Length: 215
Image 1 (cartoon, rainbow, N blue to C red):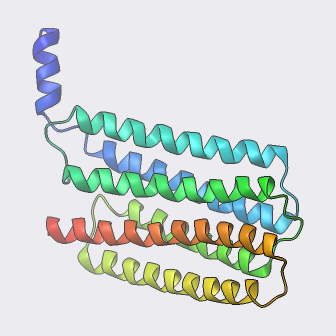
Image 2 (cartoon, helix red, strand yellow; image 1 turned 90 degrees about the horizontal axis):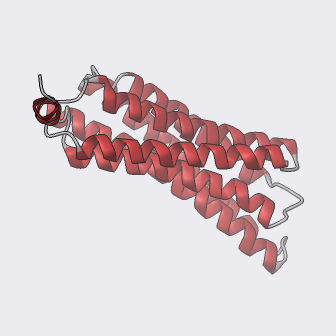
């Protein structure tokens, strides 16, 4: 078979069924590693240069993963699920990692010398959310509506818990306990973590939509 014919066939034929699912799983891995790193930093008390390096590593791996996803998508005429769903899910997974690693970096940039219980609670919620994402994508290749709906409801519970923590954190920030500069710093970090958690739920919601369309 000539290179020309081979190239045309690779474009027309769908990629291996595992390609996009594997890329989703890799993106989820970056999310989970970032969430675990954040929790490690907050529990440790002081961020180290080694932890900063790992945060950058996870962000780079996530960016590389979405780039590869879009490259495969661009060269595929047929895809196992809708193209816009692939792009949306991949972009959301990348957003989760970026938001968490940004928060990790800002802990260093803002020179915070005390990590609040609300920040630690928020990081635990993110770990729970990324654990749930891992379960979602482990079953995405052969999903059932009931299973994915149940996982989506679980993710909604986690997101609701995150909202409660954010409310408590905001109330504490404006209680007069913190000086104005620390209020700005902490609120910025809380916002990034909340955005990451919201994106986790958006991924779960997107997966349910795909499963419903496939059924």
